[in-house]
Length: 117
Length: 112
Image 1 (cartoon, chains in turn blue, cyan):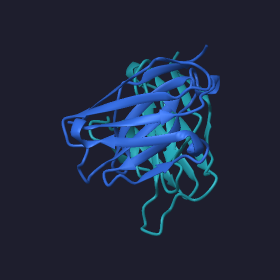
Image 2 (tube, chains in turn green, orange):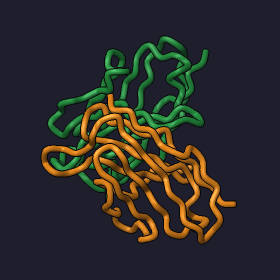
Image 3 (cartoon, chains in turn orange, purple):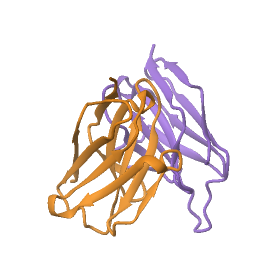
Image 4 (cartoon, one colour):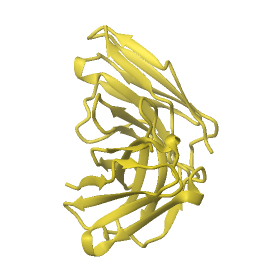
């Protein structure tokens, strides 16, 4: 059973870069069965898919965030990461990592990132 | 992007009574492979979303049979035959036929 755990800074200043990591346990991130996604949820609002990375390393980002997003994989640590640059208050949200194999089956517990000076 | 809409946005249900949520997509979710890429997730209070239904009508492992999904093309429905207290939360439909994946705004279900 896959388990995912987000970590990273909970407070980021405007214009800086948000950085989060998702540690995967219970399976290999290099497995061909999954791609690895980030999804966010502003406080009291709905879900927004940010993007994913395949086990091969290829990525796809939501066009609404594409110019600011980078998702990468560290196979040696069995984890993947999210970087979101030039953040504003609108990027304040709970950020979830999730595995995708036709549907989002495994989710992290989510981590709140607040953008504030 | 495919726009997902849901109605109603909130629903208050007496335990033991049925509930129904509608989801509509701005484009057909029927793929040429014959599958329809429509999913339902439930986000219980304070929790991460969890998969209920995949490809319109298939209950995910462990999901009670009081949950059922139906629909085709652009119109879909999630039904709960007899609502229980543990069913409270926000229900989201999601499409994955086209990137970016998009979610509906959510339907908040609570107990009367």
